[in-house]
Length: 422
Ligand code: PA5
Image 1 (tube, rainbow, N blue to C red):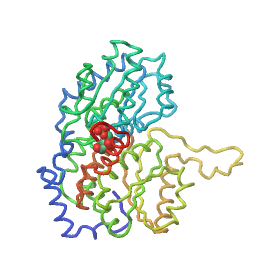
Image 2: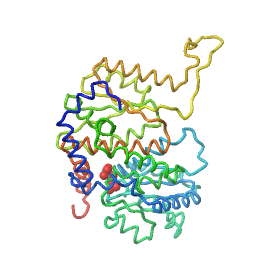
Image 3: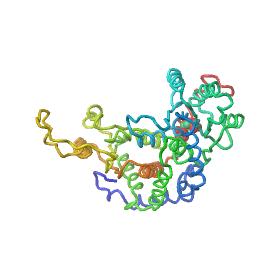
């Protein structure tokens, strides 16, 4: 973590005491929302048998299907979507299994077009809902389950996998009645902290990515961010800087990346921080931009608009692949001055230029750097964000693990549409 201000000034004895108390609360499971701290030790505690079981199911899906439709919303969708988008190659011809998401919004047109797309392809479904009663994914599942039964008859059962609570919910009852294979969302892990459970791992493994490496990165992060030392623990540093900037009058954080592949990591981050912190009239509003695209759009506002923003760059040290600018015989485009420069190096220069311009414009800067985009580093990054988010929310005296606002709208839907009992 790099910060444009003087970080050492932020680590006062008072902040240190607060951090020690938070650390103690997290690790003795006595902090607010302690019933939902299961994710903290989850990577290190995960058994090889569990990982193998997920890999076997993913292998079975891959060997029988061209497409896996993953149905879920919020934390039941964004983790796997973010990892798959980060690791996949654009313009890939889908020779392996294609993962398609549904139920993350409601659209008859989308579902009809999806079902026509599925015709002629072999299909499996993974429906994910911790509560087992969220309307959007439940609606999508109703249509897709019918589609599967029409296409496969009794064989549909072996192509549907349900990931839900162990003990309650309409989805659980349905899964038991139909005899679908089931994975459990652990009781003590909430949706937005569930990417390393079956919620995230099964779709990621089915998409062909190495979940052992992903968990390796997460386990490394669990060990690395376990000590409450603000001089070495970058997850704590990020939380301290955010709290300082929030108190200093910057209630909006813009996560900026130069890598299109990280767009959904930003979406996942927005959900994680927004839903964890935005309560009781408090919290930093998380927003995101992808550069250079947004330098020609929101960049103007960031540079020059109302001063309430700070900017956090998420940068990648090594490109997985690259191009070098070559010397053109006729320098008609006047770009020969760049010859020998890689496009990744161009983005580094663009980062420096943007950060310095925005700093001059009164936007404090934070930088988070990962070495490269692969399973291990993404696993490490996601755990970094989760633990940092817990510290951030506790620094604001907020319980990071509930979402009363989201529940309000869910219950209102039930009332408006006259669900029995509401
Ligand atoms: O992070 C959360 O808890 C939420 O975003 C949930 O994941 C989201 O509301 C979906 O809930 P469920 O998995 O119960 O369908």
